[in-house]
Length: 326
Ligand SMILES: [Zn+2]
Image (cartoon, rainbow, N blue to C red):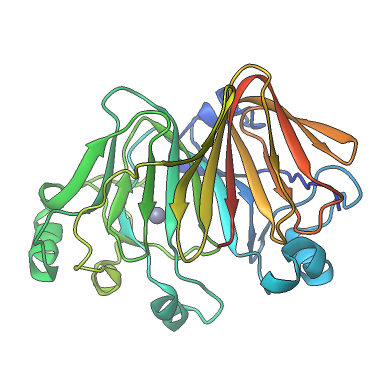
């Protein structure tokens, strides 16, 4: 198989903006609230559809069911594609939320997974803030009271971010994405969210949005404390190319390639799929003589049994995020 590219699935939510189009080149329309672009999805009716090549118009589900060896490699066969890959534009602040882990998620829906996620910041307006975890020592009763009183912000750990920062949010971590942030999100294939607090705002219908405080408190890991941006670990570096490991967790590993000028890098065949996201610049992907251009904001799925080594060459500098199973 050759690397696969899919149609983005755009989601409009009232906190969204226009940068999925203006920065990342997504085909947005005239509205002001484009919130998420689901780049790789195999979740119920949300199915990524191949946009070019041999498997044109196949859904990711069809690939998972009919090409499992080619897609996953013999040692990592999955019944569902395990990662949900998104770009997200927080023009306004998202609600304060928490996701359950695998064990708890199936109690709500036997088909669901827990949701551990990670963010890589693409752009952030000055002073933009992420909320990740609780201040040290905050327990269930204290958070519950603050949620009722509307003062939960005082109990949250938060920090300002700039482009390139990465944050790892295990299931059970209370979190919110602040206004002004454009990011890439790598997460388990799951859509379970418990909304704890909406900052006292009203929804588009003039009513407060539904909260799930009991479920959210039950899903919160109060032993976690605060979560800070990760410190990338450099794996390899030469003149034009730096490879860093951002995350190595139970559910996914995230590497980052930073390429200068026209430098090249590669994904060696290692019997597992790789999801490549171009978060800055542009690259030409080359696999067994077939080439494709990936501009900023494009995502490619490199199957485990690819026709050959996948090389990518920067056009004039590029940053590529590579996500894969451990
Ligand atoms: Zn989340």
